[in-house]
Image (cartoon, rainbow, N blue to C red):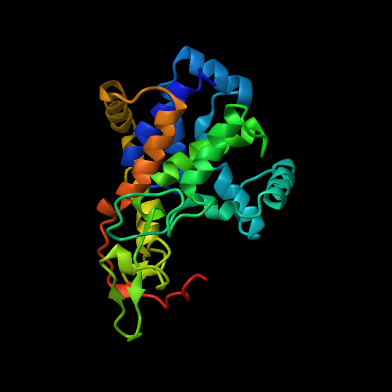
Amino acid sequence: MKRLLPFLCLLLLISKAFPWGAQGHQAVGEVARQLLTPAAKAAIEKILGNDDLGSCGTWLDEVRAVARNHTNHLTADEKTEARAFNKAQPKNAEWHYVNLPVGYTIYAPDGAFSSPDDVVHAIGTAVDVLEGKSNRYTKIQALRVLVHLVGDVHQPLHTISGYFDCKDPTQPKLISNPALALNFPHDRGGNQLFYTKTLELHALWDTKLPNRNRHSSRSSSRLFEAFYKEDKFAANAKSARRVALNTASQGHNNTGREATMVKRLPPPRS
């Protein structure tokens, strides 16, 4: 695991600039692969059989697609593995996000808006598996999960949601005081807010923005490499967990919540 730690911290660093659909996850994994140290590359190849972090970064979304009977890109054998994973980890769809309210600045593992299955806890579990502290799933699966979720946690709308007062359903009001947000309906990380009449705010971040930048991978690689060389994070699992926690806390600063229409909001969670 010690050989993987520099890679993990690198992954946490290069994720800062991209929102995450398949394009974003593949980009993060590929840039990380290009910047691997020889020791980290060898450790990853020992687990994966190769160093293709770009491809493995989309696996957790494919697993969720299998569970929902949606279109996916897995082979027959991979679908069998995905079904077994979904059976063993039935709440893995919740690992991708945490619904902190707008204005929330400090993530707490046992806070009112946290859960044992949120993205910060799920990253910690993947690290535990890679360190040999847990056998919840395989190390191959742990690396796939880690590459994916470190990307997700740096997409602002995977860590923040708008909570609304819907007393007047025609004019829902965003609750700006996070202390008052608990038990109010929320927009599911912008999935129920629209940036335009047809484009959800979450989809704008997940797919439209990275697809718009898909031709600039060379300049992005140079930028990410500069981030990595200048950053002072210590290469250890404690730092990796702290970065995940802090990133979740900071998501509310980056949403660009220029929404123009609100869908029907779900009922409050019990």
